Length: 180
Image (cartoon, rainbow, N blue to C red; front, side):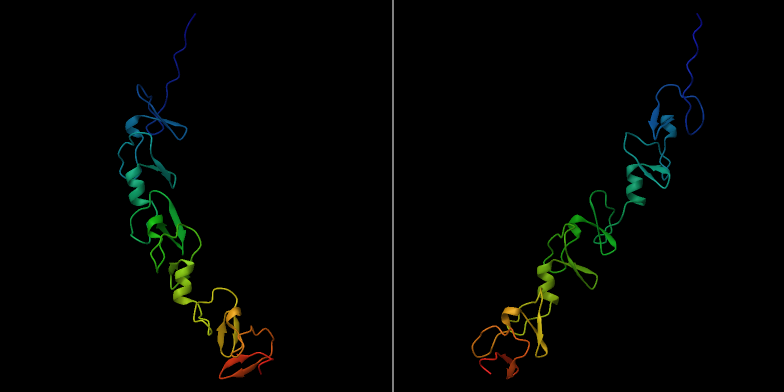
């Protein structure tokens, strides 16, 4: 009985038969010296490589030429990427413009292209209540050319909340209907 010769394994790069060690990647076979980085042209050692624009790249070249760059430091990002304000950030560089705490991809407020935590944003940029001078971060009453917390818009005399849509004014401060 005659035995058939095995079909040779063909290299995806040179189309030559592969004898000895074979690199299998991307459902193709290669001579080890022919499975090379598209950037530096060196053989890719080990099992780690990246695909980009139809080519393969060793880890150092992919990092150098194709990794997103951090808006905070300019270095390549090789781990977790935060996408915010139209740019990429290392997680430890995406920080509040006020207190410098990491924002971690959670909620933030933006002012002049910089991210802020809600507390710093309120302290620096929110409208101030005419009654207590603290930031207004929720609904406000707009009256007497000013903004007020609902609980701060009170009668100047009796300190009761002014809830009627019409009220009196004394020294540019509200008066309830009873005290007017």
